[in-house]
Length: 119
Image (cartoon, rainbow, N blue to C red; front, side, top):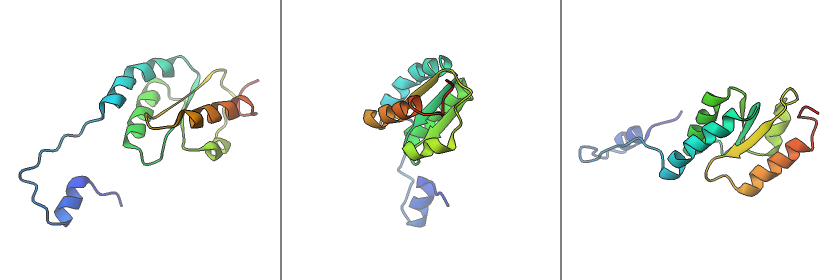
């Protein structure tokens, strides 16, 4: 079960009266939101690459999904086998701010070289 930060503090008896909680995203993520919206709109489908537990990745994935309902999440190359991308002409690959460029490039190369895409 997922517990919030506040719940964990309560369980450990930590006084929260002097704490201020701000539910925000980091500036690097905030700065990418507009760029990702445009990117998602220019492709038939989006493959979003991120770690499964990345809060920033979840937020940016939701941004893509808002703009393009054909947005798919992967965290590694093996996840591609679960996708059928054959009906899409253009597929954009993007990821969270912490996703390594080499991983996104490898996923893009794998998609391009496979039967996952429309020929």
